[in-house]
Amino acid sequence: MSDLDAVFKREYGQVVASLARRFGDLDLAEEAVGDALVTAVEHWRSGVPANPGGWLTTTATRKAIDRLRRESVRDSKHQAALALVDDTPAEPTGPIGDDRLRLIFTCCHPALAPEARVALTLRLLGGLTVADIARAFLVPETTMAQRLTRAKAKIKKAGIPFRVPAAEDLAPRLSAVLAVLYLIFNEGYLAGSSDAPVRRELTTEAIRLARLLHQLLPDEPAATGLLALLLLSESRLCSRFAEDGELVPLAEQDRGGWDRRLIAEGHELVRTCLRVNRPDRYQLLAAVNAVHTDAPDAAATDWGQIVALYDQLYALEPTPVVALNRAVALAEIDGPAVALAQIDALPLDGYHSWHAARADLLRRLGRGAEARAAYDAAIAATRNPGERAYLARRRGSLAPTRDQATAGNSG
Image (cartoon, rainbow, N blue to C red; front, side, top):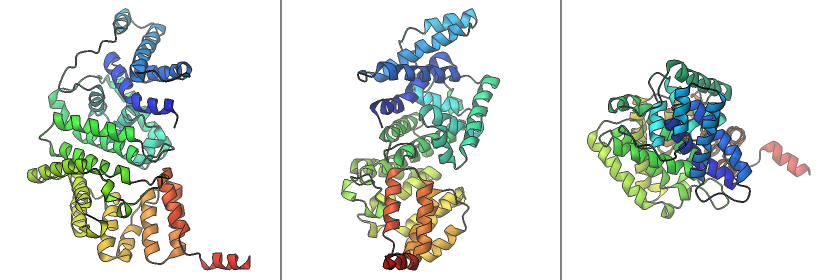
């Protein structure tokens, strides 16, 4: 990834959020930021400025004002736009003082369908492409593009204001906000749209926003659980990939490289959730991660407790992905055959983790030809370079089939 690409990905969400607050027009904000990025490519050939975010915000603001002038809007709106030439940040109003977190809540307006709220916020705040978001939702790219278009059209038609939500509006939108932050983190944790296996700027931003959310709603266990989940996942990030960029599975990671400060903080948050005793998906997933990070080595992992946590999660959310994760854990207790039978019944043919899990179980069962086909499917279904390298190595280490051995001998 070039320096310019890295800056754009890091700053995009903040600049869009800033312009959305200033102008109250989402399309205008996106278009102006796009114009500013094009201008940056032309002006930054000799180097990125010391404050690229400020440069982009100033340029995008001016581009937005130019667009308003060209469109010959009403005098009142024109004058309001001219007043925004002053780059002094507006005083925050309402319970949220951060532009990005405020925009997340705005995009999660209840008038929009839940999947549209999440997708729109991922596009604006995470800087994810339509293809990135489609993969996160396991839907075709054309379907996701239509959702985004409809969401924007509904915002315009309904006159949904891009403003700070009142305190009473926060709770009804919390579920979508949590989902957004989790998906942004996941895109950074196992990147699907980058030459690098990890997008650290996304994991860092998701954690920053999750901390703000936890500060805003300290008595909301779901917000506490999400922060715990992100911290415990982040604690392993430096051990998840080898020096050559290949993914290192959990059982093979160097636990001495895990961030103990983040683990301690995450464990304390999990204990806070347990005291409240109002479990949801994020708290339960955080508890799963707490079990993993509590084990001194892979052999000491309490798989029975992990399966029990997934049982609770499946009772709340009986989805195929939860069932897949439960089956993977169950394989460590009841063996690969039992787990494979459960996984084969799941409708997840388009999901790379389903193929990867099948490949591992088939490998353990000695069914080499089937394992090879499953590895091929998993490699085809993921774009993360580190994961592809790991899967390719595992596939290559399988014993050759009879046909391959015969072909090799004939040479």
